[in-house]
Image (tube, rainbow, N blue to C red; front, side, top):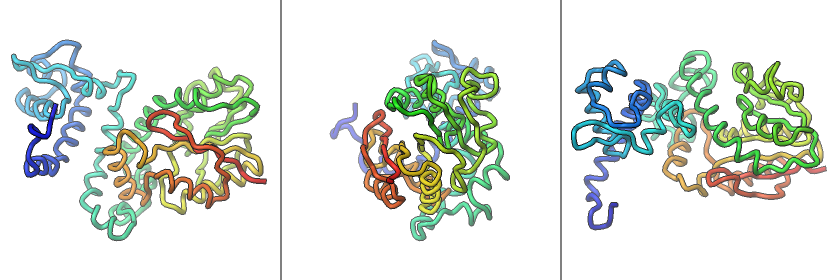
Length: 342
């Protein structure tokens, strides 16, 4: 354990931080090569691992040695490498896998955008439109389809991992209909419909997203007869009427997009509708380094921001919602339980 006596001096620590991009690039390389998937339960020689992932042994050793400095893989006395708790999270089959989150946060566009952070800080605007001549999601879907796939997989992974917590947290007794707005492939919706068999559901997201909805929700699925899948953009319209609306981890765009989404939900639900907004907050989380980094990335790509509790309250009340309760869903997520006033 690092102590005040053993901690590296400031000059060394700053040098390490300046080379932070090397760690991110090494993680991306390991994820793309499938190193964690190829490494078994026991230590492996680099030569065997290199053969499995089709690389040269010596560069692979250098990659693994760099990552082991951060606790990602561990070099053994005999020169073999073994898994650590963190390196296992790069495996695609791990139930808590962060492989696609790792890839998403290091996609090619990020390396174009990060050097322009000073410009984004000066102007408060995203830099993607100047880089690529179009809005971020338009660029992603039209010009970077592989990156769009990575984004969808990352969001799916994140949603699947939190769906059970949300379903356990949210009380829908007395409600007959539920709409998941910008709900991705519908993992949260499916978990809630399984918990509440009398509730009807609707999933609204972009066409390319909902066409790959959770199999439980699609025709022939176990929940299909209780679900309406609605292709659309919640920033444009919400053509779904329900007792309860869930908006999870999407109100991080620019203020105008956030305001339009909330307005569309309020108009769709009408007086008395319940709106549950679920977000991870940048000022109330055990993962501040990750959350603040994602906050800066949102500034770069969409001009958006992770919310503090106060900024979330302000946006919800400015939209006209009445906040009835704010509670933790799990250590990383907060739910703002709101009502559309009469």
